[in-house]
Image 1 (cartoon, rainbow, N blue to C red):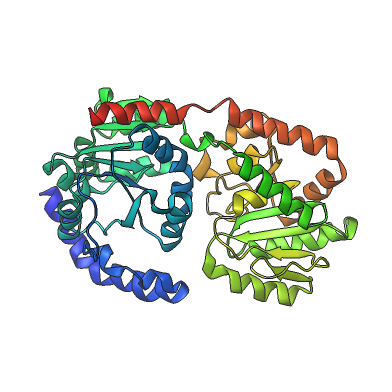
Image 2 (cartoon, rainbow, N blue to C red):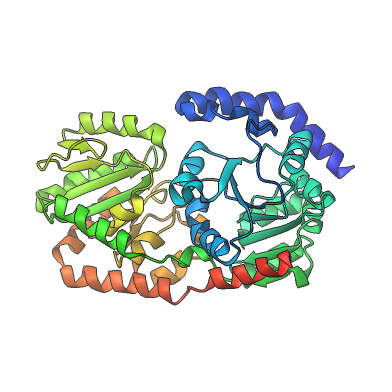
Length: 419
């Protein structure tokens, strides 16, 4: 009965869901209209059957899962890998991270027949889902097809936990269809167990987001970019959102009063924001150029209107501000900046990364700012004090290094499910 009510509710909501994706999101980003049939479980190309499926909702999950998936491919060269996602930017990131080494498509919306078509089309050997993408129909059809379901890098905030508790029947149903779960920490593990997941199915592995490994090309690319900017003092505002772009630009105008040669690189989170930030910059009076065009050495701001370059941009920075945190979006991943030993600044709203920020702040690898005024003041202080920048950057790197190892633990868990 629970499954019937869930499936019926989604069916009734389907016109709204589909119109939202195609019309509303499609208006903001035309790429949402491409491959649209895949969202209903219809595929133009034949996927390799009996593949191992990794589902990563969007860009953040793809980036986090990349080291794990690459290690999986190395250790299982005979296994076919399919990486699914929900967004066009996620799809683009999959191609950028893996090229032709993996197949890719959209995971369908969790309508009963759409999920069934996906499982029938792919016939997966193992379904690996990143974080908390918990889809009842997908999991049920997978189990009916003798496909094991693993949740890795799993996290469950107190707020989400209370939400799942309100729908306890559905939550228990989901938990019954999970074969193994790798959680960030013991607290997350206990929340899943409280929802009905058997304790023997849970392993605490830590977060795979800490397992960032910089290669020589990453380091070289960042150093070369720094040289292109004539070794100016640079602060990067990465993954910013509407309502936050304005605060970052206001902060930079204050920074320029004491550091007139400082360069701000602002990287909006979503491509549909590139032109909107361009308009804000035009109105601000700041001299700027776009990353997709030739760099103007007189620019005070560089608008990063490209995809897949944020890690490199952090690598060339003296300071990194992590977006989504001055507004109530819950923040984004600070660990790419930490990997380059770049000091991190963040706003007060970092609840999406509650498994990272507390320790990062405790080790003084990050500093929390309350608003754009404090952001400007902290940027100015750090730009003036190179020893403090280096110290804080090393503390951020230390936090990263002492939490690594989750990829190996997670890979061992997946190996056990394949056997």
